[in-house]
Length: 397
Ligand code: SAH
Image (cartoon, rainbow, N blue to C red; front, side, top):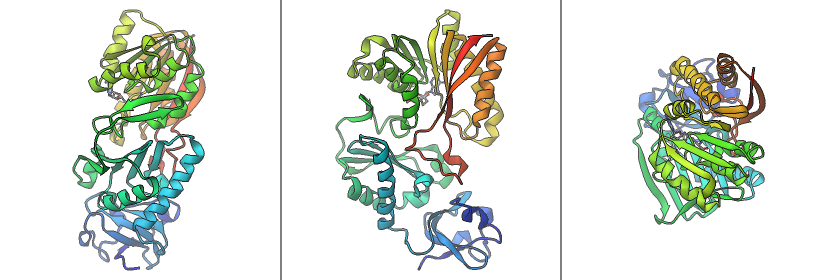
């Protein structure tokens, strides 16, 4: 194999051998292989201190994660045929899981393509490259996606803040096809108009699909409050299952504006209302107005983006859940979620419990929620497991 070697210090191969894919910059033997000799995204052979190759990956000398392993051994170069192979393996999982071509097709490290995310909306693909190694291979990735899926459009939604860690600019661009035409996300019988360019992340949050399924069967006849609703995924699905009245709340004007149209499109326009507001302010206002809901959904953005924000973030989750319980009717359901990797599952439930005690309520945790299986967890890479949640019954003490 022709790739230049990136030598690890003694003992620093253990994590990779245990299944992880990342090499941190302090684990590189820079005397033998100076990081400065590599350009961002260069392919390399990752080699242990004895000179035995672990596999092939790519380097970013500017990042704390100096290299990511893409293939074990030296048999498979980091080229388009490897990407096509990985895509086919990823596709075969999603086709087993879902009847329709609407899902997360590639979930980075967990699908053997570190730094790459691809969501599929029928014949439209929305991709994100979060590392220099993937960013530099956009053309090969496009060719592989076109070969495997023949999409009408491929968008690069490369505006994620974490790109800054790799010194990459934020750019949204069309990678394949012609612009224009409507793009939909589908869940079951429902259809949501999304915006792959101006929307949040890739335009839709497929990670909550199975969790919305769980709520759907409990929603009939209920009055539902969908906080941090974005396009109304939870609320509109609940309405479609017979919720009597749904209120969606989000801080984004663009998101709130499209909720009515999406509700209408799914035949539940009369039972869904949308309000633009800050969630905390709005919950306080609802509490003051003595409004009560049978179901309150709390699906906020990550309050803990970095580990150092953990303590403050935990408090924010607790405050939010307490506010949510204050607008819950007697014997109501609280659906609470966190997509912060740095908030452990148990800490979220703790926050709910503390809030409940403070309000003199009793909580029964009924259903544990997690990210949908098109966002598989890599057991060796804790960061791939991020979404947790609970459906809880809240009773007077
Ligand atoms: N529940 C959504 C996903 C939520 S993503 C779904 O299932 O698709 C988080 C949402 O919170 C975003 O739409 C963002 O606009 C909104 N948001 C962020 N901060 C907020 C705040 N302080 N108050 C209300 N909404 C907020």
